[in-house]
Image 1: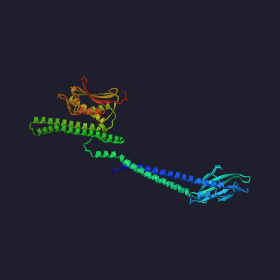
Image 2 (image 1 turned 120 degrees about the vertical axis):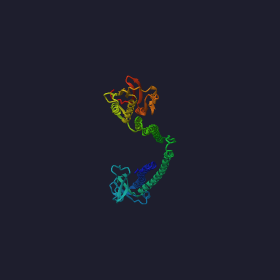
Image 3 (image 1 turned 135 degrees about the horizontal axis):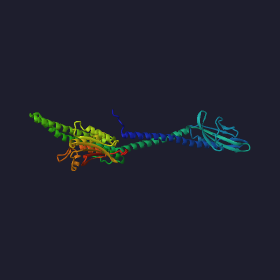
Length: 463
């Protein structure tokens, strides 16, 4: 069962929604901490202000320290209706002047006695916020630090923090929703070029492999270029396939018709000599047809492997030796001397073993059928950059004016006395070209007529 992958729009929308959700959570958390800090700062100022007013109300009367609690101090704290207020005023000797005796009036550790301090605590089982203020007296009767502690429960400040956080959360959610809507619209708008590409491809005729010509953003041009490159390769493959079909239909039709005619003559001719002649012609036509079919299939295989099979490191000496041994039939005339020459060490090239073997085999087959009278040889040689496979014979050779013609598909010697090459040299040329080499000819000399296949050499060996 094929997997149903989500659409690109769904992926983008989901990813952006997740990012916005995480961002909203982070902003909401930050808003909560900032709201807590703001609420604490606001109420702490009121708390310290109340403690300072009470401290200012401390006076020395008749040699004793007394306090008149100012109503204004508690009026500021009474702005929070749900909070309770506790206080404690102690003299320099720690004696209680007013308030709750069990309220902890000690300042935090390390705090300066002259500076107001604010801290968290608990009183009678509820969390409170405490403000502690000290006032020094230098009266002959009263000397030392008096301390005022004012505590307030945290309901109001927590309520303020919640309200601030809620307002910030609503704003964050509204902005996130607005951003998500804008992103969805932007993503849909950005994906329209892909929809245009899909529409253009869907509306095309199956035989139309011309490049796409669409006005697309810069980021999608690489995709369009890849599609055009793929269609160009597909067009090339289809052209090769159509050429193969056309070659097969054209080249097989004539020998099949001739073979059918020879069989018909063989069936109706009663003369023994004529029947023998017709039988020989049938055998000849059958051999030609078999060679032609093999060449067509070999050509199709080479074309397929040109781009489909990765190259590997090959020893061209060993490959040429094996190819010569396999290509020379057992029934070869004993008058033909077959030889092989090559370096004692491996000569490495990058290539497809099957394709190179087919190329060498086709050149050898042409030499056996149309050239070699008494001698056939294969020689592997090298120079600084290339490896060469020479196939030579003692035949008449091909005139230089026909070298280009015989490398074409089903090329032939127009003189009528030379070679009919079929696809042999065309296959060899295509294989050599695909490997970065070439197919060449050398006019007859003391070695005979020579056909050479060259391949780039791997330059990591001795010469």
